[in-house]
Image 1: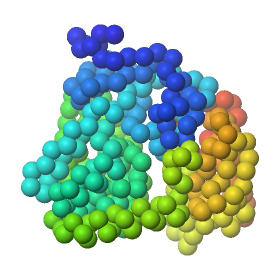
Image 2: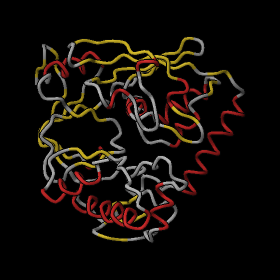
Image 3: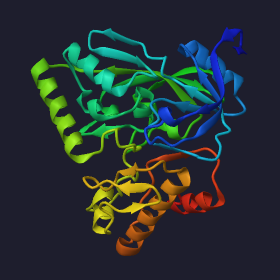
Length: 310
């Protein structure tokens, strides 16, 4: 397939099971794999009137089991890293866990928390990923993004990003991240490695690994509430709850596992049961952290409209 004089890998009716951590058996009408950011920009220009889905590791997303009409651009091959002293630049598709290990190899601190996050750097910046008292915003300097409205690449500084809990300007504006720059701190390798090991142990003891298909945290922690989303779900009686081929994880109730070839309908149903019970019992409306992508059934549409209204 030719796109803007560039030959880019292209597939139609592409099975996405291995391209989302929840292992939903979704299919993409169009699936592109650019080899570099130049090819990616070419695709973004091609689809200027039909914004494609930008896909990294496929965590934090719930794909429709019915149909995904929007073209998908997979960033897995856009994964270069460069380093100048303590300033690191990573392309959109660099895996966060790899980036954490790379920083360790250079005795640089600031990415220890990324070792436990199954994402790419684009996804981490998009949602201002955070864990263990570290966040992307802490080290972020700037980013190169494609601006759909201007039809060109622009640079955003930290002050442009509107970082807050699970939020960045990338959620609001028609921007697609191509690369990001970070300023890290020199530190002893033993200290960095110790923190990474501590983070991995916490994840092992409290969160499911990807052998149990999950999308990461399902709901955001509610603001101005003494309890986390996981604690509220637990107190509502959902620890280990099973329904519609899904299961609330025993060790952390804000994780829901695809236990038996669940569909997006199954997953939406159990999310809505959790949401409704927590609202009824504690008058707290949990907001989904997971993002639904693709065509919804009428039932899914109704449930997501209620859950996303806040």
